[in-house]
Image 1 (cartoon, rainbow, N blue to C red):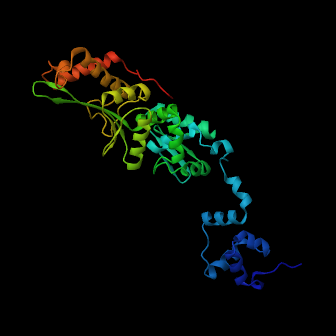
Image 2: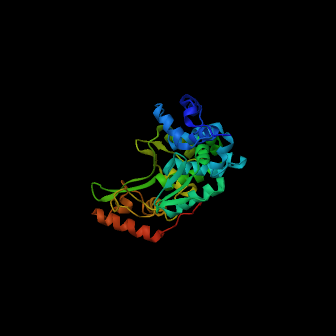
Length: 329
């Protein structure tokens, strides 16, 4: 049987089949012709040819069974559950993670926290993370990304997660530790008093710009008897009892240090957060021992310069030792 020539085939048939979603190769096969004449006929008829991405999408829509061959990972029933590990993973994403186009990424200077992200990802999904740089851990999986995006964690902490946390003080302490390690700051400032220099401000701040999340953090802190105050930069822990409670029940992981965008700037740059928190408690303890006359005069009454206060604080910091925090990770 003689093969049909292109001249015997109407160009309109090619256009019709192409618009129905058939590829050029499929049209050529159906009409027993080669690829090039079909392509040229479509172009001559004014058809805008599809890109590779558009063609792949149409082919998958026409052949749904092909979709699974492009999946890097398939979620099982256990991975879809809201486990404690998934809640901790979501808090890591809330603080210093992001989800974009099938990529779940966590960026942090601390190896401890990057390793913790990797551990939680392995625990929840059974998949190992990869590195794009020394400070970035990530996975590429549309299925995992969609599963995590469903919680919309960057907008607010979902009600089901808040309910789970409020029922579990242990889990609440763990996620607050994550928030503290990634977004927490310890403030100890020195100022001039009428007769001496002294410590003026002592607080822990959980940095957060999301107004709804701020109040949710206050609720979580309150559930473990810590008073938090909403401010412009986040949630502050100010009073002595709450600071002691935070140090005892939440704290910071050992080795996590103060890091700012402008490296080297700031009185406590690169000091360990856990030890700075213990330094705040040490100041309170010293006040009890030496007496609390006026604005901390019982402790710093002989400090005539800022440097003398800092020297005393550095001495207590060194006595407290580095790495005094207890890790939950």
